[in-house]
Length: 321
Image 1 (cartoon, rainbow, N blue to C red):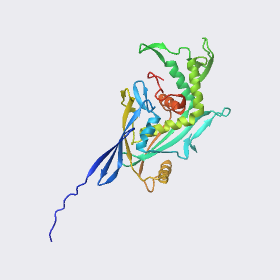
Image 2: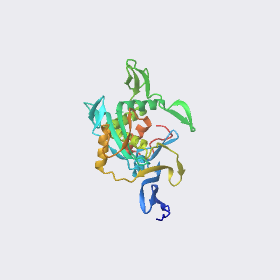
Image 3: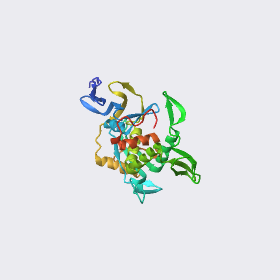
Image 4: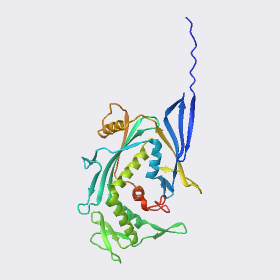
């Protein structure tokens, strides 16, 4: 019996680059078969509202994450229930003013189901409590702290010195204006001068939150899911500026070609919602309860929801709210 030497099989591997307006898409072809992992270099544009500037740092907005998710393909799903005060409630759970029916608070839970760069299924499970009154107080405090800039330099002069003042409920400010007290903790709170233009702006924003609070909360939680999912996993970006394109940023995103069908995603969602294992899929859960979103993030999502009145790229001016 003779023995023949086995020669190693040569595997021909080729990388293909697809150029598109949103960036460059990379795929690997091995022995004529397109491999599952996908890597893309996506371009984000400030002019399109993909990114915005906060105090000199550029952050990705919801439209930017939606753009990146064209490759990441993370499925955003809504579980049937959300835990409120220790008990399951319909999701989302919206509390409204009994007289005006305006939104007071929103409890919402969302899941992002997708593949990590290594090919494993990751479920990002986030719950958000969105309190409309809290953001009214924060927007007023931001106006109170805002200072003037002279010749491009920050000064100690308040831009809205007469808009509001801290105090207690039974001591009305002894200064001109039409004053109303908003409690923050016990008898302590803020007296607002509702004739001041800065406070009028805050009250107009408050009205928008009362109208669109459920949509704003949804945008916040979905943005946080995509920000934390391993397929994207980025919030701040380095930018480049040109005369033709303006301010842009390039972000590397990973996708994974798969055979998940809607009923597969529903199965994973139900198992993750109940803290159980799936019979057909292995997955990892990343869970977080968002008690309060950052004021800048909430302000950006507010303007995205009512974006018909706001030009793209004008969310913030001069690095201030």
